[in-house]
Figure 1 (cartoon, rainbow, N blue to C red):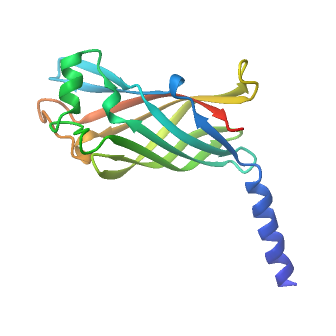
Figure 2 (cartoon, rainbow, N blue to C red; figure 1 turned 180 degrees about the vertical axis):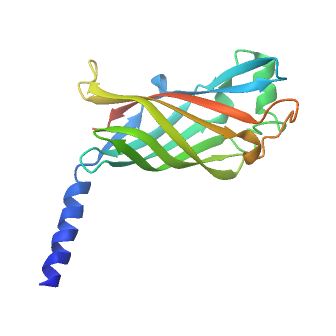
Length: 188
């Protein structure tokens, strides 16, 4: 009798995972942007223009994961000298650490919508937990590709100094705000 319960549990788990869908990050519609203090007199904003990754979402089981890679060399403040300095050893050290990653291990739902992600950010070779808050989430059939596309707007905050990016402290505050627009197309 106990054996039947084990088999039933395994089959139920297999059936639940059968509903998981894979979505590939659409790099032309996904741009992590950030805000950081500049001498306490203004807020500098920038973004990364090259992002790739995969979202796995099981809306029936209300679970999911994500795996994101950001090309650190794609940093763009809209100011060429600042871009070059940000890529240097003083800051992102892109020669040694060309990729920033985010591994979302658990997507939390409120009803049918994902509302947060618990995961780990790796930057400059340091990995720390960073939680994302999802403010907006929607899926539609893509008008050109004729398959589902999902989009979200997510935010997070962390201290750059926790990752070893200490340039300019204490003149420049260590707090960083992220705003991430993301679109992901269902894999064929």
